[in-house]
Length: 65
Length: 261
Image (cartoon, chains in turn cyan, brown):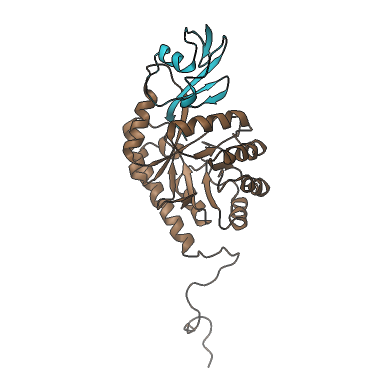
């Protein structure tokens, strides 16, 4: 299905957020996820189902002021 | 300096952005004596690992991290960013920024109060990036913020303390609240001034990161913050309009004018 990943079009076969992260190649690293602008905690990723056109944000630590 | 349940001996908080290299960032943190640094979040592509590298570097220094919601212009965006930061960094602290004006990066005080209320209810410990507005400060405290961070001047402007009167009034109005001047500090004398006014601490970033020698500047800020705090505790002299002789007049010899017979 077609999704939006960090603002860019992407294609995944996975049905859940957790499976999609694995399919897309996101490993263990420190990152947090949001689906359609709502935070999805790590524990809820396996049961969070994806639908066509979903917007996923994956963000990681960076320098800040 | 108290931040919620923790006490820190250093009163200088340092940003981590825009350093020439990770190595200089690490040296600057150590030279500043800071026990708290600010961090942020950004999109990461699969396999990029930049976030992991940065996070490892910060953890090696042993300092506490204060995640920010920099760049957020709405309550919803700031709240979601805070929730994501809590999971990634494993802290309830959030330096809450809700930006209202694109040119001055002035906080949207209305959105800030609303976001503070939501996040406090979710168990966050909010450090609110605000202005010196006393009414907004009242509302933020009511909403649950126990640390307020008024701006010295616009972020990155290096203009120092634009409104000393306002900052002094805020300190007087909230004598027991942790107040930290955040933003606009350009040189160590600006930081010293904030400390002389009785502020609990200062947070600065570009002033060190963009200096020609960030490590030396970090040390300069460490000294100025310590000097300013010491001066505040020593009860400084207040300004006056006219001169007052610093040498006692009593017992002064009469050596001028005509000698009388």
